[in-house]
Length: 532
Image 1: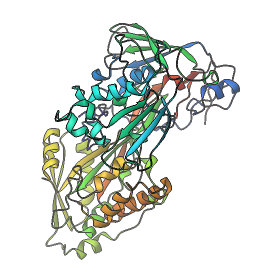
Image 2: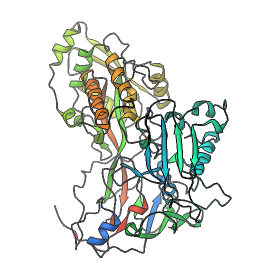
Image 3: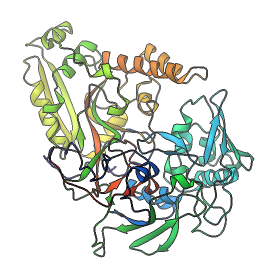
Image 4: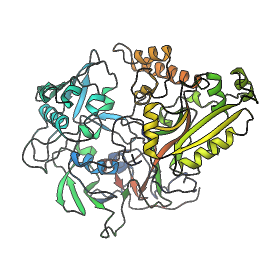
């Protein structure tokens, strides 16, 4: 699976890295405007910017380029960057703010007494671009169509724990039995198989966008509507019926998407996601994707905490990771930086020889292990550096096991490894998307890690009667326990290169979701350069 194909469920994604290698240091601060203190990577709304600076052109055109086919249907979605156009056209129950947090979309509020049955109240002023109201039945029909389609993202309905989703996808039940129904025009009920407190955070997934149920395929309910469509370019204009208030008026009346694989793409873009050619204005957005090595807990030596402690403690990841801006060394566990707790970053020194000797390892009986990794760069370079570091101890012998990417996937699935290169991507911004790896009975747990204490903590997070603060405290215990057990060897977090013109404002450079809505952006007319 390629790095840019990150639209599927939270899953063990063993990336084939295809990004360009670079040794450049990150640009620390963007240029400021001549008339205000607003920086290009601001999270302020367009309305707030307009009040501060008269330099915003409210009737401008935004140019967005992607290295992929231009699509207008969710069923055609293949690459992450194609989703930007779809999110401009369609809006789900919830959306992201510029920082990547969930906020109300078509649904203005929601509630659940048991975290299994959820009621979403839709906005009565949410309309399709033809003026018709967006109704609860539109979501019911759209999700039923998703379940019956060939869309590769339809399994997400099962990962959400939607009632009967597995049976409907397997065609053992009709789509009408899917756990979603319209209570009336503006109340949507979602029924789940089990308590899922974080369900609202899962609903921003692109596969869940609604579809217009009429015959006109150009009708949309997002901030923009289709104006002109060609193979090479798609032009959008503001949806006159979009629910946003006058104070939240969008800065760009027109958004033009260009296929950058074509020679016609000759003019400068305002935004290019997953940029193939970077420059000094490129922003490296952190992603909900991390890279690490897994230990096989079935191995007689690796099942011992002291051995894992020794192996992890020898590695200083800044000496292991190539100096690339799309690889973020961010802490001592496998979580993205935005999900880590502050105390996790503290380093605890370990006397490696003592730990290994506790496990009965001696010079004449060293620890012999095989390290399995992709036989391509930068995986091979990282593996070589790991082996070199571990080889500094007379008590450790690590043998290289380079394999093809497909073989790597197969070996991990079978548990046929000792230490193996792995990775994890989440498609919603919540700790639950990563901690499922740690449950002993999780199908995603291939390492054989099992802890009754860990399972108990994870199951408590699904309780319907705990507060968000209590749930966060449980996650903190879970992560601390995973660190104490040295469950994995964390390496880095992925980042996505996005070229953004200096004058574009309204985004946050640390948004880990990869979602930038055109409706949130604006353009400043003037900039001044400065040296930090």
